[in-house]
Picture (cartoon, helix red, strand yellow):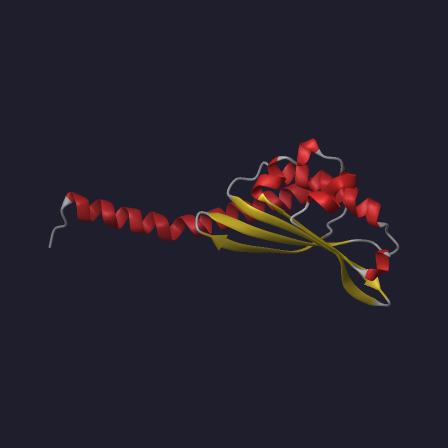
Length: 144
């Protein structure tokens, strides 16, 4: 049975829609990995989670901080990452989760989330403004 032109186009569109989210996810994962590896001497990336939201994505990156690091250092490192991440297409939001040893246990000590709009204006702020500018900013009591 031969399909007419509109049925063929519909089949092609469905195939593209099925492939596109996985391709987008792969492209985002590669872009995030490259950005993190360019910013730091050692590989500090523990995990990348990508959740599709319509034609965009929520991305969460877990990063390993060294023991005894200060909050201000993590803010500077986060700021430098966010300045590069803002160029990645199709982001709905980005979350950076910093982990470090606290009482001999690897603990999430800082979580920073920027939505697409706030990320686009990252160049207009200083790293010191991240706590107020972020969509979400959660710090562990280890920084108090």
